[in-house]
Image (cartoon, rainbow, N blue to C red; front, side, top):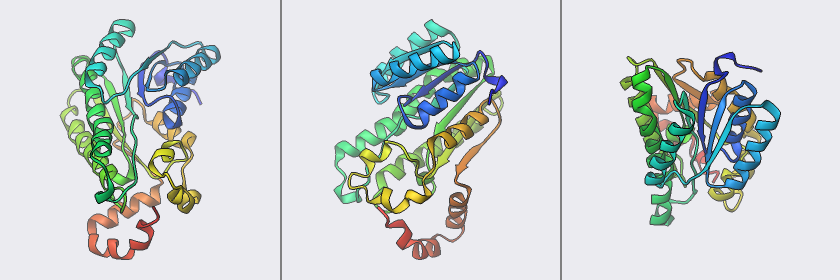
Length: 265
């Protein structure tokens, strides 16, 4: 499906080497957008770059970067502005998680998750904000998680990073409301991607929730459909988001009744 509003727009996607990042890139290229793809795996990015350029004849630039390196983020975004000019849409998709009980999480894992999921996201956003405010045009899309709404056992640190992303996103949306810059949070449940190769080493969680897992193509389509619209949140699947509403209203009851479901990791 071609989305006319994206034709000729410059879209930056972090964590674009696989999963929903790569799927978002494919849909944007299909609609004629120019892409800047960022990830740690340069070989995967180059393969995707070649595929999209040949298939859709769009401009695709790739940069190898770990978004937790904030100095590198500044360097790369400065190069992006010099190369393509304005950034119309930023999709902050880079992130990772490790499922462990709080006492078992190492400081390296804790710092790593916060540096990528939170600080890296903020660093990328900070680079595009001044120009978007000045132009009074743009869209920032932050990939958060249902874990940012409902924390569960063995995901204390990961949930904390996504709570932070949601808090930042909600504040940012209000700050930019008078500048015609849209801000959207995307809160999916578990997605069938390589995320769980690191997060779920034993495969227990994937085995228990496999039938509920979202397909990355489906999530990507929802994200791309929201681009340059005033969509506040994308919650997937919808029934899972209802749980977060009940949780806010009846937290103690929800935790007691949902205890068995929460312990699927």
